[in-house]
Image (cartoon, rainbow, N blue to C red; front, side, top):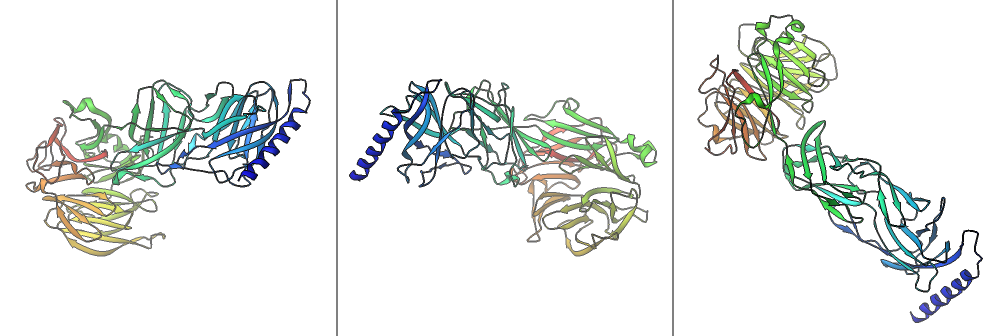
Length: 557
């Protein structure tokens, strides 16, 4: 080891002598030997930990000295590979006086230097993998002094860990922005003299390769941001598809330190959104921690079903709406009335994308693969009653196929099992798709399951393997085991019209006509919420005094 050090010192001495013999150019800069110690700092990784790196044999570091115009970096290999800190010998054109110096690794990173400003990028569009890795350091010194210069190279960006709360949604992307308007990504410029950092993009969007399912809890998304100071903090907006599901907000000043990390604030839960239908009206209201004293003050969307009368060719008196089912990530609604009509409504364009009036006593609907739709038509004298009907969204009012189901009241397509579930009377029917790629698709009944009680009225998806069945009481059906479990909060209910159950939180929103309210014996004027479907705790109530409501659906929990 001693002989090795003597050899290194001899080499260094010879190099320094060579450097001092070079002549200055007109700018006072000359080719000098720069003895440089570079240390690789640990950097934050996507797994919420730190990654250590060492200098490898044959690997290079890049070094640049501040100067006018475009300055090209110089490269050198570590003298002591296998360690985090190594001595390097660079031959660099520089003044003999103190000067700003920067170095980075990997040496082939996309970094340029012009007029003393380093330029690189922190992508405004990221995938949550913390890339690119760019460790950078800087100092000011006399590059050919006996002591040389010393730099620690740390990740240029600041790593943000976006902590996701347990919820029923999936996060398909997260959008980060500074509340004070600072730029946090894109093209990044670093002034070498004072290490002042500026960026060009006001937002950084993280889109993971696979949507993050928040049902399990403890999930994290990761973003790399420019190392700048945020005068008023930041906001992270979370999306499930095009639907905004949560915000994480910190309004205090935040420093995004180079090589550092920031943990997001707790999610600021957005208000619950409820869709309900009654008479000639469909409404969406927002509900915070306290129920609104007057629901009309909480309305964010209202639709008059009589507006479709000209499209359907029916009278306005036939346009009573009973169910609204959100589909396509809440972008569209299947709206239907037991008077015999159903439409696919586009919330963004306020347009009708498809319709049918061949569906007497329609009580429920859902989308199927290949742009098809299924309807459940309940009891009545019409030949199309007591049926499960299939339509193509490219053809209005044309039934492709239909199947008997006494008192059909609910249909749900399950993407995971690739099965259609339909309820009526005391039956849960399970269908497979047959000849689905053809012009003559069919539903093939796989089996019929007897429900615990008769008069089932509502069928909703709980998750990929569970359904909620309600009418007289309410039960969860496990599609894998084929078993039912009772939600005891509803044991005394004999006329549940809709139940939306959140298994992750234990809560439910529902409508109950056990004691009828409104103008029919199957309607209510109260939206009900329980925080625990297995307890007898009192409900939170929202009164709807001017409408006779049939069903409620949750757009956002």
